[in-house]
Length: 353
Image (cartoon, rainbow, N blue to C red; front, side, top):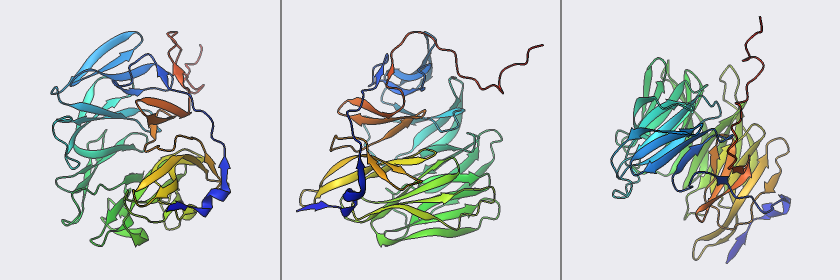
C-alpha cells in the first residue's frame, strides 16, 4: 500500500536538475573545502589528514592507518572540528567514541578537546559540545578558557541514543533526551544554577529530535526512526538575549515519516521529506525540500527519489548521491586555479594615514 500525504498538495514544485560539485580534489579523499576553495582538508593517505592552500600542501595529523576523519564547521567560520574515527574499517560500532580536536579556520595547529561523538561549535566558535557514549555525559567546554561543564544522562539511556545539543548563551544549553518508554523531550539546562526545565515533550513514542541554529532562532525537528510510521514536525524558537525559550511555533507538520536531516539558514530550513512510503518493504521515496520560515511554504529542490543525507559545508548545501555530490545552494564549480583575495569587510580594512 502506498501512503501519500495530503501535504503534497501544498508543496511548491520547483525541482530542477542540480549541478554536480566540481573540485580539484578527489571527492573520496576530500573532508572539507571552504566556499571559495582556498582551504581544503584532505585525507591524502590512510590515517593522514592534510591542508591544501595556496598551491601548498601540509600533512598535520597522523593517526593509525585504519583511522578516518570528519571535519565540521559552523556558521561563525572561526574554527573547525576534527573528529578522528578510530578503526574505521575494522570496528563497526555505532557507540564508539571519536577523538575530538579543534583547529583554527585554514590553520593546522591542533588543540585536543576530548573523546565523544556529535561535536558542535557554538557562540562565535568559542564553545564546543560533544557526547561521551561510554560515560553517557554531555560535555560543554570553552575552547579559550578551558572552562568545562558536564551533564550526565540517566544510566538506563540506550547505548545507541545520542542527544542533540545546542547552546543559546554561555550559561544555557538545550539538549534532547528520551525516557524508557521511547518518548523524546527537549530540555533547557542552566550551567550555573544546574537547574533544568522541559521545553517540549513529544505526544508520540518512537521519534527523535533534531536541532539546528541560525541567526535569531533555533529549529526543532521531530522525525520518526527509520522503521516506524509517525508524524513529522518542525518548530522554531526565537532566541533573544534573555534566553527565554518558553514559546515555540510550528512551521511545518505532516503525517509523513520524513527523514529530517535538517540544515538551518537565516530564512529557511532544508530537510529530507518522504513523498511515498511502501510500508510492506519499508521503502521511502525521499527528496530535499526547503521550508520558508516566513511563509511556511515548502519547495521541492531535488528529484532523486532516494536522498538520505544533506551536508552543509561553509554555507554550501550538498547532497551525497551515488559517489558524487550535487549542489542545492552555493557555488558548484571551484576548479579554477586563479587565486582570489579573501573577502574582507570595510571594518577590517586598515586605515590610511
